[in-house]
Image (tube, rainbow, N blue to C red; front, side):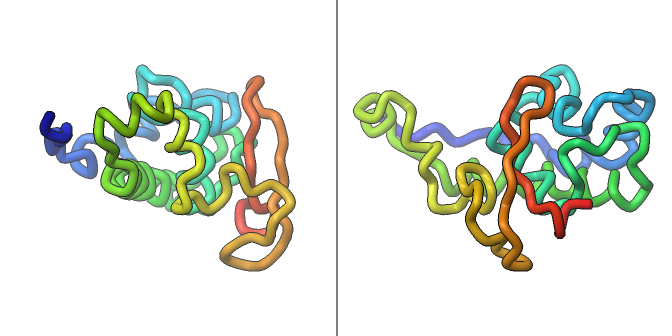
Length: 146
């Protein structure tokens, strides 16, 4: 069977800083919890939210209503960039998916923080920490994500 190729939805155009800010800026919840809301951006789960927030240098526990304009801009850019990157890097044939029961994507060598608790941060070398936010585990760098 042919591999699935996702359509190009111009994610950068549709999921921009203005859109995110308009949907989330009044929420007092942690930005991590807001990113997991599929009605805002479908496809961001626990793994990708950790990676997006790490790359955007935003603490997963930061309240959405406290983000600055530059943080909204970085967040929008990283959502589009990370989703495109991981779609590309995690392509898998239907046969391989069935053999591994869909679990191999969690072991990808491309993840920088998810699954790397107590390891050095790829950026600064400080120890990556794990916490629970909204009932979900979250790995982050306390030095890079303030």
